[in-house]
Image (cartoon, rainbow, N blue to C red; front, side, top):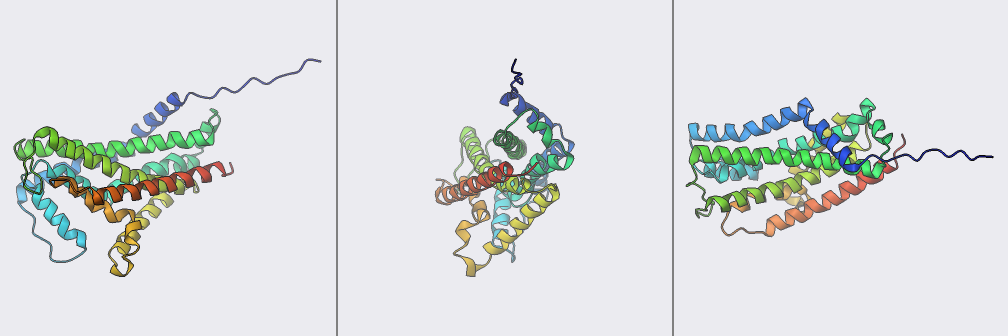
Length: 288
């Protein structure tokens, strides 16, 4: 009696799946709209500072307000400070929400529309599916930071010229060194956002509603900001990922103090590891 054997299921190549994921992300209208919005921000900042002059120093509010006013004052007439200032200002809210939006669409969004099942029919294991989705989210986050850094640098050079690349310590840098400082800031901010996106992916893996992911990230940012302003909880501050975000302006000092940047990097890597582990465990153990 002949034995009937079912044909082996061929797994889809990872490279093809990654390309399909990236095409889907960067052809999505809201992704392009977010990138366009982020790209306009440094242009608006540069033009507004040039037209209005130095901003007035703040007299109250959160501790970051004084730093923000000082950073914007330094950005006036300085082609090096403008892209870093744009990264700092958007890191507080817009960039994390952009990362969370991408993570929400990656799992929760596709689950709600039923398209996530198509990935499993490819066939793709859940671990490989998470890796592909994580690559897509990481690429979009990198693109968002890159848009701000590149357009901010070009705007600063066009408005102020190449002879205005001075650090906040008063040292004038050549163009290559200044671009290296901006690239360092962009890379550090990207890792911070990858950590936020990892946590957002974990939330996205256990819900079918993308808005839940966005609301959770937004609520988390608000709670972390409030906790960071409470001196009674100073013991908790080193564990808050938002606590070190202002330290990115250290790339504008000469020499660069790396202590706060290193601590912020380590905290972000911890959040990245925890978020990635939770995403994997939730997706693998999920029914359906």
